[in-house]
Image 1 (tube, rainbow, N blue to C red):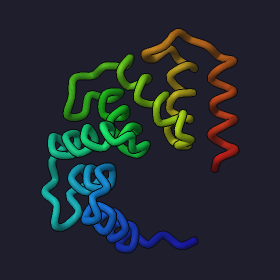
Image 2: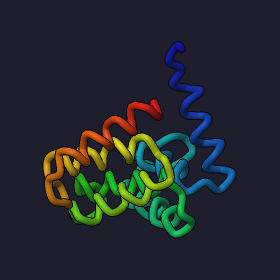
Image 3: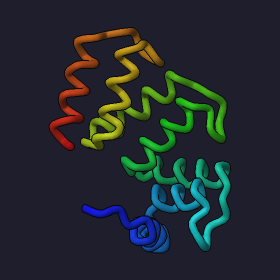
Image 4: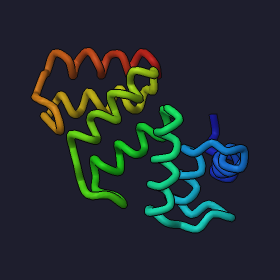
Amino acid sequence: VEKDEKKGTSIFVDLAEKGHWGSRGVCHECGYDPYEKSIEKAVECYRKGVEEGDEVSLYNLGYCFHNGRGVDKNEKKAASLFHRAAEKGYPEAINSLGYCYDIGRGVEVDKKKAVQLYSQAADKG
């Protein structure tokens, strides 16, 4: 599949216009037209999506907490959000949760659990 950045951007914008908070957050985070580039607005959108149980918002807000983007860094909160998104089957969250267990970010190191999660994420593509 060839990379088509314009089409990818338009998909996020279309979903954002339909009320998908995770996509709206991505639009703000990346500054996709017509959305203002603002990590603070992105975090606000992700929080609204989390309230609705959206796995993209759960993962993206977890990523923000993991890296201190627009929020104070909080690895325990990040791992918790990754866990919630992973329970919904979101591959990126499963992989990120595996990483948390692999190196002990926000959770106790558990190499066996990390390998299981990495394998589960790989199976989902």
